[in-house]
Image (tube, rainbow, N blue to C red; front, side, top):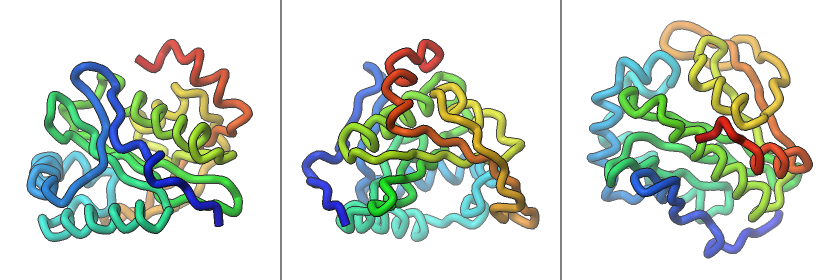
Length: 197
């Protein structure tokens, strides 16, 4: 297995003067849970965990994300706007043997539509290719989740197909659209992404 230098991990990333990414800390549990709770109905449409998420579950997620980092399996970051947590973005895991990973994300409903998640996904994709030297980054989104699907499309990911009934959300199964970008294609896509801002 390829070991990464943990000092090279994106500990924080500034998108602009108001927006950035940083590693989650246990002290974020109350604030993060408050965002989930305030957006529960919105998030539960596409996130299977949202309907039943608790404060303890939020703290467990943060602890697990720190273990993920320590175990060299990727990391999760808070999406921060004007000093307040508004969402989460991260790597599901890293497949070092096949040099690939996937990225997931969510953001508070009121924080959508400003390019924040697009820029955040761009930062993590850059990290995967330029720091970890991976070959493939994937994003999956529900077929009916137009906003989520627009992010990888905007960044030049290729739509590769649909996984039927890939995830259970509440009492229904959701088809996922699979998007991916390869390292060989990323440098031109990321450097010329006029629609990303």
